[in-house]
Length: 234
Image 1 (cartoon, helix red, strand yellow):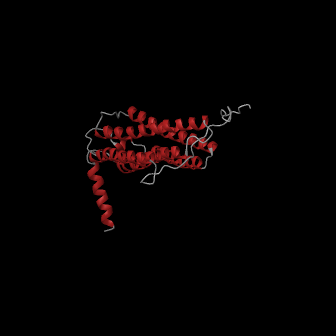
Image 2: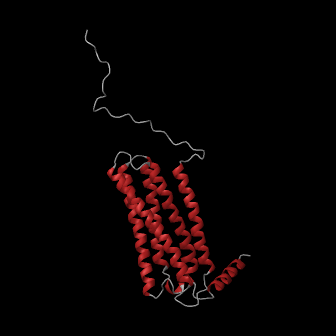
C-alpha cells in the first residue's frame, strides 16, 4: 500500500498570520508614548516659563535703544498669530481624519498645517530681519537678548514640529493602508497645540503688554498705569 504523506508545506501564496490587534493596557489609561509626550511637554512648560520670567524680570531695564515701542509691529505679529492658530485648527482636522482612517483627508490637512506653520516662520524671519535693519541685534540690550532668546527657541520648536509633520505626511502618502496610526498623529497634535499655546502667552506678554515699553522707566510706568486703572474700579 502506498504511503500517503499527510504533512504538507503551506501554500506559497497563503498570507502570513498576524497577531490580533489590541490596545495597549497601562495603569494610567493612556499609552506609554502619549504619556512620555505629556512628560516632555511638562518639562517644556518649565523651560519656556523660565525664559518668559527672565524677560519679564528684565523688562524695561534696557539703558540703550531701540526699545520695544520703537520696533515692535503689533499688527504684523497679530496676523502671524492668527496664521499659527489656524494651523492648530488644521491639526485638529488631521487628527480627526487619522482616527477615522481617512488617509486622503489626513494628507490634505497635514499639508495645510505645514503651509500655515511655514507661513508663521516666514513672518518671524521677516520680523527678525526687520529688527536687524533697525539696529536691534542679540547683543544690543537686555530687551534684544531676552526677546531673541525666547522667540528664537519658540521658532525652533515650530520648525521641529514642521519637520515632524512633514515626516508623517510622507509616511501617509507612501503607506495608504492605515499608516501613520491615529495615535501617531494625535501625539504630534499634542506637540503642535503646545507650541501654539506657548505663542499665545508670548504674544500677550511681549507684544500686547510689553510692546509699548519706551525706555528704562517703562516697567515702572506700566505698573503705575495698571494701579491707576484698578483704582478706578476699587
